[in-house]
Length: 113
Length: 115
Image (cartoon, rainbow over all chains, first blue to last red; front, top):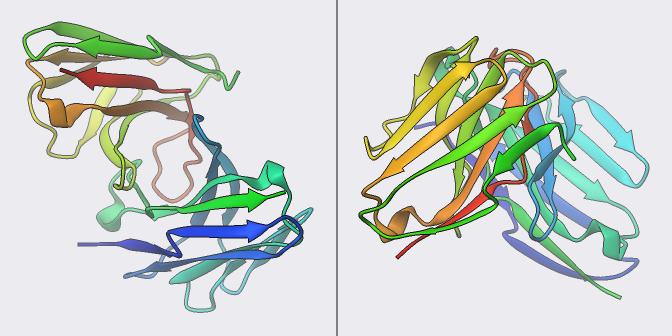
């Protein structure tokens, strides 16, 4: 079945270092979304990418959608302790199933001060 | 406060109990969802309701029974659960259930422990 895979599963960085998480889909996606879940919290929507090759920035966060619309990445420059959490990518489910977002397992980021 | 309120936040129940999780959204959205989040597993979609009609049921066991009386409220009725059903149950809402554009707003979740 359709899968969305994320790597790495865990990432430990020193504060100030950069961080990147990668998302790969087994199928072409019409769009991809990114969510952040803080420890003990719930997923919060960050951004949606729609166009092939699209790049969007939010302060220190850079999101990219691959040319083939099958992969995406999230890059954080100069991490801060506030960046701690799990980052999920999600894409629409196959067959046009209404509301069926397929989530990756997430990348858990820890930042050492 | 996300605009999606879930109660209770924590629930401990025995395998023979019957309980319900409640979700209310104040965003004027037309679609509501139940997701299950277990350790080491991705977020799993359980149910989708659009304009109070169920449009998606991802082969969820019948011991989970959803109810959507109106576009602002969603319930998950639980009965004869198993310990492996222990998880964080997240309610979410979106403007539409269109798989191409739906951005989800999640509630804080209900942490369920089945003994």
